[in-house]
Length: 422
Image (cartoon, rainbow, N blue to C red; front, top):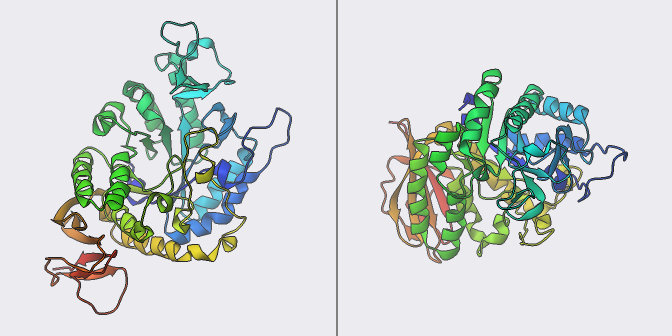
């Protein structure tokens, strides 16, 4: 992995939704709208949140939602043009923010212009295969040399224009050997670039090893976090953390508790008092964490399996941070505190986690690396809980508070304790 990704905390933004762009691309000849520049007004907000990079959703010319690309070399006219991209990279760089792009290379929009050999034939048919049955998403043939050359050229082009890395959409549907062929040449020209694939299920570590990617999305941990909190069954979380440790033996996962494809955390949790528990886990275990825009303001949104079912989780943001509703400030400050803790302990990116104490509703989780440790105490019960831990070697890190018994955590509360230096 490039060294910068060891310190990365990403703010994930879906630009088409964030900027309020129309749901369908305009016909040829319609003037470009420079909406991408709206993001520049939010760069200081991302820095103040504590993030060090932007993980952007699709920004390339597409038919509708961005994941149906029609031209990988052109900014979507609903968002702007090359000048807008260059400006965003420059303004972000002035603040120390890196830009990670979202590349859709498993499939393209049906109006994508290419030789028919680029598209995978449907078995037993003369028609083209599609992505998961979506008729407008035509699958690329990853065995075709021209496809490999095209993808390498796209990666090169935007890294050359200032991108720092790529999220590779639907990587789980792309043969790992495809990336093994494509990436070495790109890395030779851009040795500091970071590549993370979208994996929902399957053999995460095996795919990373075979593909040569730096990371993949950690959906197992995402599911275990909200599910264990909802069911008040922290044994599920403990099992997932053990699996997470095994992944860290091979790579550093891209971790999250919300993204552009799932119901928002504030909606998913049955008890919103447990939102802090989810964030505490995310920001004290190993991984490259990403925060989905709006989650830091406790935005709600339900994903539905229908056309337009993602709209609620991909909303427009106001023109400026000052226009956000004030009721989101406490959750924003909570994110700041926990991200600040993470940045003060950058070794957490590769930390292994052990469960020091466990019941259905209480867990003491220790993340450690390089002789340092952080202890996260979670209590999901309606009563205060006393943990059987030695408090002589720890100090309170979060939440902030006055003098108190460090071993006691209140009802539906949590604490993070940092081990004192010897």
